[in-house]
Image (cartoon, rainbow, N blue to C red; front, side, top):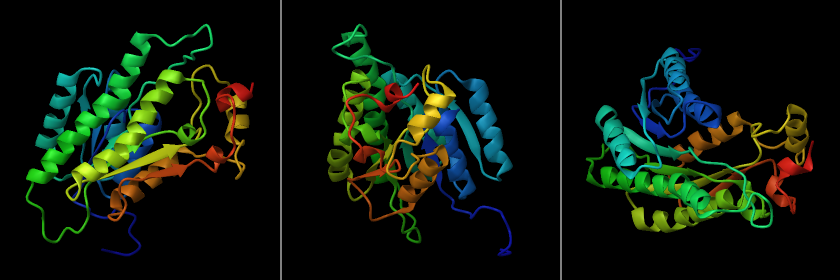
Length: 271
């Protein structure tokens, strides 16, 4: 290859990224493609955005396909993995990015309800663990290429607030705390066939009814004067996918946001 070429390296590896039609998931998918990975794009309802992401990846010279699935439905989750595995026989990484992020708090008008908690748990915990199980079974039963020294991985998208707790977004926080625990437990259970790692962003994108000015202010409330960007998280995901000695631990990519304790979510500290 011409060393001046801008073409991505040929990895002969594929990654499944859930919730990859837009926002952070899209950036993660694109970054894998830039580094030579083929990409399976999962989406829930955003078909047009998913196909747009597929088109962007194909322009990078990589293979990409979009797959629809409702992650709240166990049958859909299993069918999703089966479809991806059929189309991509070189699947080496699963990025569980999709999640529900809706406001509730025990001591407020927006109280936690059983329905809200169950919905968060189904999408934010159950689906990622089911997919991780399926990924493990696929890797355990596959015939490994003796020339391939990389170790397949599952990357669980978490949140810096898990070591900087506050009462806001209670159902979301509880679900991500359970997913954090799964990183260590599954890493032990799935070794040596599959690594499991956590990736915890700080505030990276404008959410909910947050204003752009509020987001900009909140984004600067870290020791480094800036939190993570989608590109920061995407690059970290690719690093973890290729770091064969890392398992059972979580990488916090947040500009040090987790070091500044707060009684409220950072979103409510700005206007």
